[in-house]
Length: 63
Image 1 (cartoon, rainbow, N blue to C red):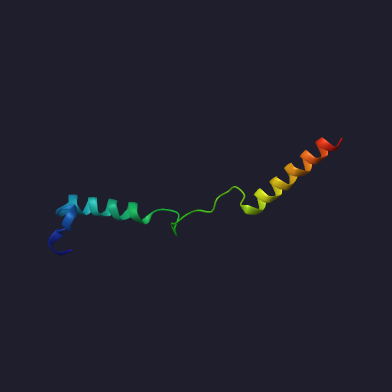
Image 2: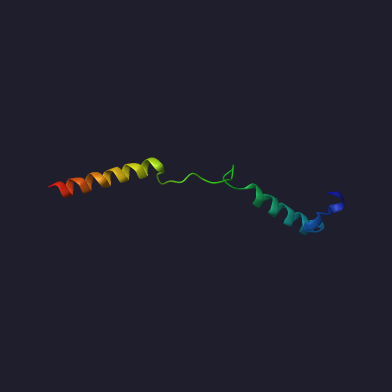
């Protein structure tokens, strides 16, 4: 950056401070970005719950 000109962020010390704040905010984070995996179950869990429900209904109505 020539002559302390930080473009959009301004000139001099104020521009440098704004630039560094923006840079630091964009660099922090969990790394990798994107969608995080869900903590709840997926298709297999749904199938198991459905089978368990059917089993319970069959047991309740046969006795």
